[in-house]
Length: 333
Image (cartoon, rainbow, N blue to C red; front, side, top):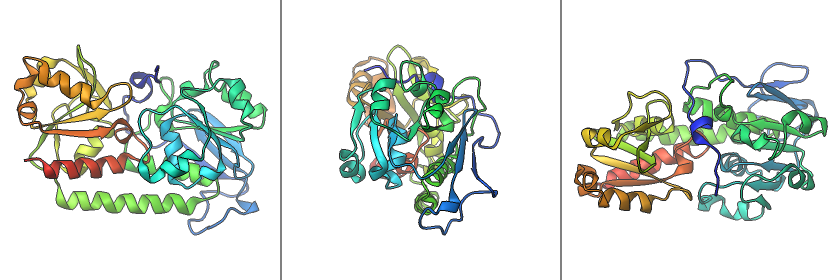
């Protein structure tokens, strides 16, 4: 299955700039009051902006379509499955906690649905993780959707080249969730997610289960390794658990490294990403078969931490990824 290009859409060179999205309410400034429990007429229209595009949401959407797994899971985490007319494009399995809700949502396409398929679902809101979702051979340009009365929003982490870069941090992840929650009139749900995830991160900071561990984050690749670098989801997770990323000095979220560099680093632990297009089993088998790599300390000790790809990228599951890595590190000898 062809997947969105993460090398151009998830791996930005990060700059120290504020998150470039806005939530503006017509007639007043700022976000909806946190204590608001139900959407009211005076809370709308809401404007959501990302990737240089402003969309106006006139009323809480009732027939949203999510175009990538990250977007789908934000919707599910906000308990908005009953407002979804469809979803598309998974990288790996939906977590068990959201599986029942996900099963109630129609899957429009295994990859991106084309414009005709999308419009047949009669959406009033389209939410994507990568701008490729709005290519001409997919949902179609957001401007054209707006002319049809369909609002849209793209994750600010997936804007790609030519757009302001967003610093990958838990705060900016929570900002995206809050933006979507405001668009649907449920800001209190985003606040609850942030509170719960912050508590989990505080616990990890206290325990530091990765202290004194050196880690190679192995995403994919055979001729070279696509590794977690110093400015993305993997680095956030390793910082959260107190571990040291052997490629933390490399810029960006991800970087291609040679296997000679991996051998020279000789990490204590290898985090292995698991995705439909590059499974953890395949990668571990390759590590244990290669004459040079099987002599790595982590390989000899089978010191592997396996993590779904969806828990390594900026999104609602990133904090879950930190908790999982921490738990697995605690079990290693």
